[in-house]
Image (cartoon, rainbow, N blue to C red; front, top):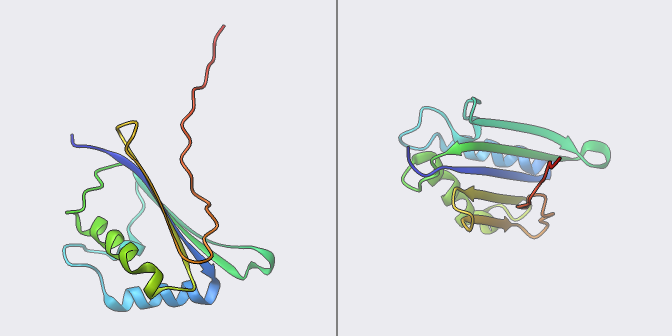
Length: 134
């Protein structure tokens, strides 16, 4: 079985900067041990990704990556890619923002990390009790 998490990563900024980021990452090639680049991971029942323009005049682009019920272990090549990317983010991509949220199985195993000077804090974790009593 293994420990499972839900994870979301968003990357956003001016459209041209996001395009340059994607091109640069793909030039580096796919990480060892993967048959695809993490930015192009095939969607499935546990993973989806979206890319869309937003803001006035659609001058900004957001890339959204979601994983549900996944083993998010640092030893996995794809997870290692995202960890390494976060470790160099602010220095390597000063014009972009990245947000990372992971919710683990344990109640207190939550991570919110925000990168970039213009971070908008789009991702947050909310735990709540809902009731449907008679």
